[in-house]
Length: 143
Figure 1 (cartoon, rainbow, N blue to C red):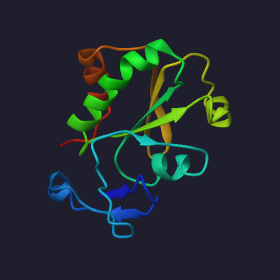
Figure 2 (cartoon, rainbow, N blue to C red):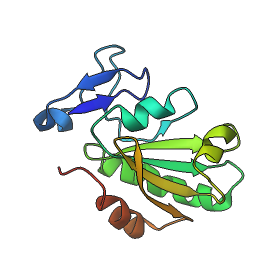
Figure 3 (tube, rainbow, N blue to C red):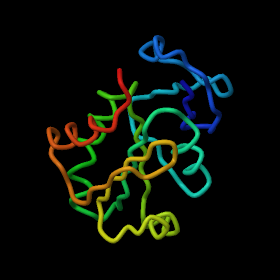
């Protein structure tokens, strides 16, 4: 499978059978499946959500948003649990307003799942751990 490095943006090929072995980027040597959300911005967003084979969930959030702060640890936990089947990115809507506008973000947190760079699902509002697991599991790649 192809996996985009969240640090340098390089596209790497990783055998699916070795995804659980903490594969490293061939360009920058960082972990390709770090088990935590990747900070996204205008320059790395498109490559990250469309360059690899894994689905990507993007959390559109802001620091001042109380529900965003509540759901952040839940998203971190899901990122760790599903690191080999789903990548997670975060977009700070205050700092990246063009991205928020591009996707019609009207309320935060808004979570969008992309497959091959195409939006396949979205939900707005904070979710508990069980609800988030169920929602993203519908879209995660087979383990």
